[in-house]
Image (cartoon, rainbow, N blue to C red; front, side):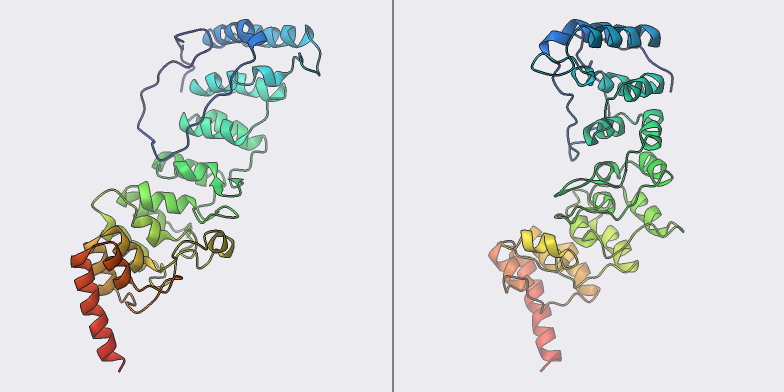
Amino acid sequence: MADAAIQPSQPVANPPVVKRARRHRPAWHRPPEQYQSQSVMAALFKALETNDLHTFDKVISAFLALGPATGRDARTIHSLSSIMYDVLRVDNVAFAERLLQRGVPIRHDVFGAALDESALRCLALFLRSGYDVNEPEGATTPPVWAFFSDDEELTYWLLDHGANMNVDAPYWNMTAMSNVVQWGTLELVCDLLNDPRHLVDMNKGDLLHYALNRETDDIVPVLALLLDHGAPINEGLFARHRSCAERMHFMPQGPPLHTAAEKGNLKAVQFLLSRHADVSIRDTKGETALCVAQTNGHTEIAEVLQEAMAKYKAQHL
């Protein structure tokens, strides 16, 4: 990708970029510049626009030389670090490397911005410079890249650079594969599950539950793929993530059949029953899937589950 010219609406503002909507992903916001550095930011932006690394470096040096390194009026590289967001927009690895050399840290939000721009050259630089692509962003947030795993090209590039589909957060169950089964295409789900590198741990990420959150009409085919690859059909939500289960103790935690019943997805309920989902299982609040359907007013689903429950009782008398 060639370094492109960028036209700001004001000296240091990001110009609008037309790209595929990513509404399920975090918004990576650039930090506000300090008032004292506005003119400097404009000079840095102009140097980036003209691909003049020498001037870019001179502007930084001049700024740092004119003020104290500590205190209220300190002049540090952190005052200028938001120029990195503009560098990422044009994937200019030389400028990104110079900012790293100057001490700009590779924070999770910076890596997320690079992912959002598909800035592969800068991403490669960040990884070479020690960024851990598999480090959870926080206690309840998985690695940053997990939110981008439904992007096929980006995902395979990251997998080739050490990304792991199965890393969650200390107190949340979402993995990169969880994101794929909720937001990715059916083809991507299939390709990842069938990859000879055995990329996906079917016991991580509550994949069946996340698949039931899909907003497309292919939920059942995704469920089928997951079950065919060993996803546990009768395992409760958070069953393999104790810290998450304890944190969400107030929430009913049942198997996928409960989730489908709660969401009112008749086709998913019928499919799960056809794949031997256990209709007798109760969630952590003592409710069966039938109770869940009735509580949520899903009459047709309740009738299907009532019939399934009757068959179950007849077989287990």
